[in-house]
Length: 156
Length: 195
Image (tube, rainbow over all chains, first blue to last red; front, side):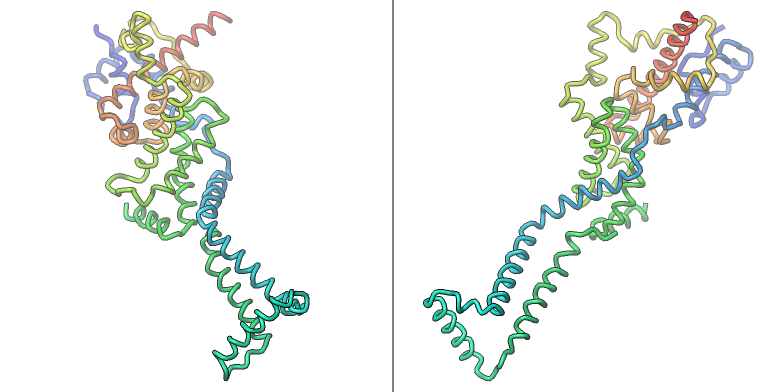
């Protein structure tokens, strides 16, 4: 009597495979093949369990943080531009309110006065209060921030 | 399939919550491939992260003529293969060659049919010994067996991931399972002797 081969036993043990009816006939009358089939069934049942192959619960979060880091790197030039504009605006505002012109060398003060006079000549009818200049600077900074932040932060 | 395409479009339009969903959906598959291929525990999680970084960076180039799971699985498999090659760890081809050099291939030993009585193992015995036995298989056998039984993938899907013909996948699966069973029985006999 020819016993079932391992391939045939695996087909019988695998519910996704279609077994030949002749294999079942032999199986019903052969104790050895029944025992060998039991081993395969036990093994297949265990193989369908994960066996502890699990990633940490915060795995997705960790990957998203890595992506966020990469995205930030990609926009570094924009971030740097924002910092330069912010810095220059802050210095200008601080200089204005601290009357820094009194602390500057005479040549610089003259140059600044000429620049301001030129600006006034180009807009003779416009009187620009200092508070409005300051407000414009703040608005510019806010606009820059709103433009950049969605790209740097993840939409969750 | 339509939902899958919509999810890809959401990710590509900059919706990162869609990519987070994608990670949660496919992290088990990636974990199974990487954990079965790579035995070094310290490197496994980082490799899984690398896979999703590659998915994020290359999603725009996904051709959409295969399933997303297969494409992600292939990235995971190739990442693991590259890691093993970099570490100079043996793959299936290397292992088979070693066996041939030693005078008798692994497959020849597998093909010999037992005709004597066989010990019947209980499920609890199998469970305790199987994990160790799996690690005695070559990485490719481990992946084929895992993707088929644990992830429920078809021969074709496994073949797409591993870039192998369906027939080869089937051959690996049957040989791998037979090797596992023989390893389990050998271990069981060894433990019986120690009692």
